[in-house]
Amino acid sequence: MHQASVGFQCPECAKTGAQKVYQGTSAFAPSRPVVTMALIGVNVAVFVLAVAISGGAALRGAADTLQLKGGLIAELFERGDQYFRVPVPGSTAGGVAHGEWYRIFTSGFLHYGMLHIALNMWALYIFGRILEVAGGRWRFGAVYAVSLVAGALGAMILSPDSLTAGASGAIYGLLGALIVLHRARGIPLRDTGLITILVLNMVLSFGISGISIGGHLGGLVGGGIAGYVLYDLGARRDLPKALPWVLSAVLFVGCFVGTILVADSAAHF
Image: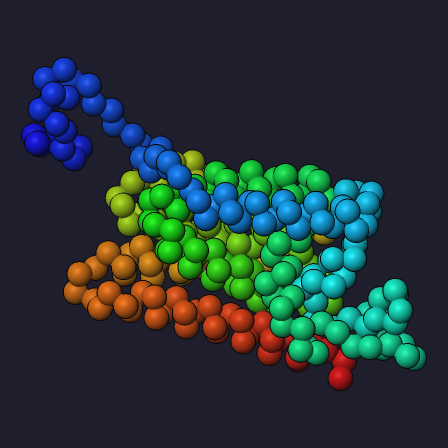
């Protein structure tokens, strides 16, 4: 192998001059983003199920049966086929504050309408395939899981009484981790366009009503921290190899427990 201006190249390539230099996100050329495609498949399957159960309501973006049963909310009261935000005679209490902790996870796979899931799955494909191949499937899975629960925590802090659903929090986390990954690999952010993407999405998050600002911010921060732990600290040889995984697990559990505690404090016991 011969030393080149960027990395190394084979003797044949050196003779022919057949080498390429990649910048920005193209520096990570994804080939088989298995976990990313599996996540997209699960999200699409859940949406198809929602349409099969609720029909046009799910397509139009109305709160359908699956969202009422699995969306993120501190407290919700059910009586028959009706749901209420406050207790009514004969109703049963539900929500994260009443032991339905699964909503922290299921909410990340539910969407409000066709446009919502289409935009989220497109972003998941773009960001996910880069992160997965560049950092490995396990690291990508850990970043996604932390981002999902961090987004739930952010949504619960800012809007505990809103029925929140969508993969946006986790996807914002992937964007945060992707920014950290480029920094860790020494790729200038100005060559990636990621900061522009982040700014535009933040403007949309704050400018359009009905968007979970807390979910987006929580996912972004959680994913950024997880990315730093797994990609920055994980590359250091002077630290134990298990440390990034332990810290990621602590972050995941902390966000999960924090979401439950915030829901408890917001509920009308």
